[in-house]
Image (cartoon, rainbow over all chains, first blue to last red; front, side, top):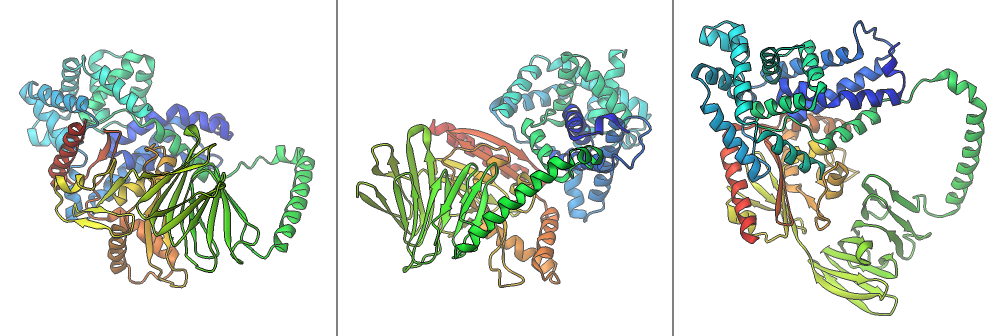
Length: 182
Length: 417
């Protein structure tokens, strides 16, 4: 049987260890923290409830990730099939975020500025992914590029942006940490 | 292990939601390797999502609580068998104690329990006479033994909010530490402030009469408050610090639920509308968000038990919020959005005319909230002239105006400072 799920203590430790990462993963797909919490919560519950029934080939961790992955895709599918009005809503979810503080607004402005400085194609791909929420495949088709190129360009964009913003990011993350920890 | 290029491509896949479970695990493992890696990953999330790639620490605790509540106790048969005799003794003792307890209870005329305690969560209590009490965590009320016979007396420890069903012939009195609070048809809130050796009583509806052991008394009308000072026992009228909670519905109408249920609805709000409530603190909250935060239908109460399709009422108390890990200024005492709730209710009633019983209605209501068009929701808590803002939006059409509202609020607050 699975060692880490043998009792509640272990299970809690397992939860503590993986919660943040699996939330991040889920959020990367659904881009909605509330939905992500629901999905992750459910995944942990199912994992616990089925701990005696399921035979896990690899590890409980990868089982958890797979569950979250599947539920996230299901959620996206569900959202896609809603009424056209809601579909509109879904396609542009969460792109406008009102900031916590002046400091965050400042960062938003800076991110925006930094994006503008990106090489043209790089920027286009980054914006298509970030603002229009297109899949790499869709971007590749639209721009007549290979998926691999899109992926590389995204990586490049992130790297450039991160370097451009490196003076600001750590301190801001710290601020955010303070905000949540208060 | 990875070249920098490789990891950036991988992170790019990850942040844009393209990563397979394996890839995600790879990135997470990489992030665990050093603080720099972790900062890098979080930074990329921020750049991409323009929102916190990090997660609310409190959410972690809250979600664990939810999970814990749902996972059944362990089927640890062998261990239990070994300790069977311990368990059986415990059970017998418990039985005896319970029996004695029940017998004692039976001898009283009231079948309702006499002691109500709220430990970690807020507790809503409905008494036999229709009086409702909301007990804050770690608070307790003890009803006098023949509560409801000739008089209605109780003692309170801690904080509570009372909605009293008035009855001339049976005066309702709350005693707290030498202070007597007598209602005259009322909603009032008692807050014990041990650190300043004070008890605060706020009247939101009706009238109450306060009296201390020295025979001094003070009458409070709706909108008034008083402080009782220990150990002197002096009573002093003070001004209520107002907190206004604005409920925002999908049409971006602001609802300002007044303490006297006369919810003001401001159509197409302007900045002045939000401010003219002249509160010390201000909170904007939509039902959907309240429901999300609280993880379920918010204080869904069946208003009238006799009616099968009972009018469901949606109210929530700030203490529920604080249970959910959101700390609010203790001045925030009340909020509800009945008007918005009724509207939501009507909306889903038309949607689900077949739903007859309350259970079905509740279930449907949860559903209805989920599909409530647009589901824009946000929460603003302003306290001590500092805006703490948490927000999430789904409805692009409304972003601009909401953003504008927030900016205006911010300016106003900075202006006050």
